[in-house]
Every structure is written in structure tokens, then in C-alpha cells.
Image (tube, rainbow, N blue to C red; front, side, top):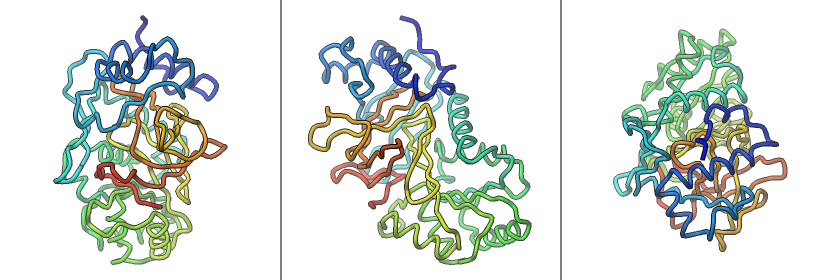
Length: 326
């Protein structure tokens, strides 16, 4: 069997996504020992798989308990979830970090344009204080690519951050403030202001720092205290090399190399491309790990392919980048 060609991932279009995904399924079935064992438990014969809805999805929790890899490579680079003291962290082994760079740079440019047109500010307390965070790497690379003198990370320097934002506002500088939810809430409560040229993007993550709030509650509080009309969001996780983005109201859109499916809450082998259910993800950028993942997130896929995330299944572990119930 010919190896899966990762060089074609980011040129995929809607019309050939299914063919590319089926090719990757066959490759990962042959080359990924953990995924193959899972498939052998859930399907009779891989030759029967003809549609993306039929492709088995590996439970996301396997990244906590198994070493997930497709093919053999030196396993030295990995991303690790933040987790909590009561949970085991997920570990995502990465063959080539440039593949991740291509993925997040391509998606960002698709939804927001070139990073050099922005001043990018990361408010990622707790995440900055640990190693192997895919979110920190992504924001760090975007900050470097922006090359703006004011771009950078902030931990808990809220007064300094407020002064910087006001200076950027006075310059009418297009700015992205990307932060974990509890960090943005803490900042907005301490330094409420009216932002006109700043886009505020939350990445999830309460990490037990505050009471759990619905996404609507969080967005209402942030819009009121920061003066923006919409709160943008990023949907990603340690186990993925791609992200979806929302420009408001919690409605997400995927880049072309990523697709969301939903499985029935009662019958996990019934998978659909539209409607309500538990989210499965196909991420072609995960060519070297597991591209077909069954998450613990409840959601809805709309007719245009956009999707919404409602929250976690009741019995699933709370992830470090926890989703808020809607």
C-alpha cells in the first residue's frame, strides 16, 4: 500500500475530502496498531468501509492510556493536555511539528487573514506556565508572525494589558486578544473598557478557577465589560492538529481538511453529517496519530456544515480546556 501523502492535506476541497479520508483510514488501519485493534472490535472488514460515516472513530480517551502513532518514527515531540490533579493527561505524539504549523497558519489565514496584519496578544495564564501546550505553541507562532512591537503574552499583568490595549485602540490598530476563558473574565472584571478595534477570542478553559458558566453567560459578560459586539471562539484540543473557529454566537466552521460528524447518543455506530449528537472529528492533519476521533462533546451540525458545541457528556472526564455547557 502506498503511504498517505501528507503534502496534499491542505489542498483538499469539499468534493474530494471523502476520498482523502477513506485513503487515510486504510493507511491508518494498516499502520496504526492501536487504531487497528479498535477497528477490529467495531467492524467486520475494512473493505466494507465506503463512506466517512462508516469509518470507526477512536475514543479520545485512548490518548490518555495508549501510545497513538501511525507508522514508526522517533517519538520525541508531543503535546500534552493540562488536565487536573484528578485526571490523566492526554499525550499526542507528533512526527513533524511543521505539519501543525501549516495547519494552524492555514486555518488562521483562512478565517482572519495574515498574522502580520494584526497585533496579537495572548492571555494564557496557567497554560504559559507548563510545557507541551499546543495552544501556547500556536499563539506563540502567530505572535512571532505578526511582528508587531506590542504583540506578546501576558500572565496576570492585567493593568499592563489594559494600558497596552488602550494604546492600540488609540492607534486604531487591528488587535486579537486570544485567551482562556477564566483569564478573559478576570481581566474584564478588573478593567472594563470599550474596545473598538480589538477582536476578543476565547479558547475555553475554566480549570476550576471559577464557577462553571454557560457559553452564553460568558459571552454576555465579556461583551458587556469589553464593549465588543461578538466574542470569537476557537475549538481545538490536544488530540488534534487542526482548529475550528467561531466569529460569534458559538457557531463554528472548520477548515477544509477538518470535518465534524455526530454519532447517536444511544447508538454510537449510527453516525450522521447533520443533526444533534456526540461529536466525532476527522482531522486529516492527524495523519501520523489518529485522524478519526470520537470526542465526549455534545453538539449540533447545521445544514451548511457549521456546528455548535453544547458541552460534555455527563460521565466524561473534565478536560483542561473544558467546554462550557450551553
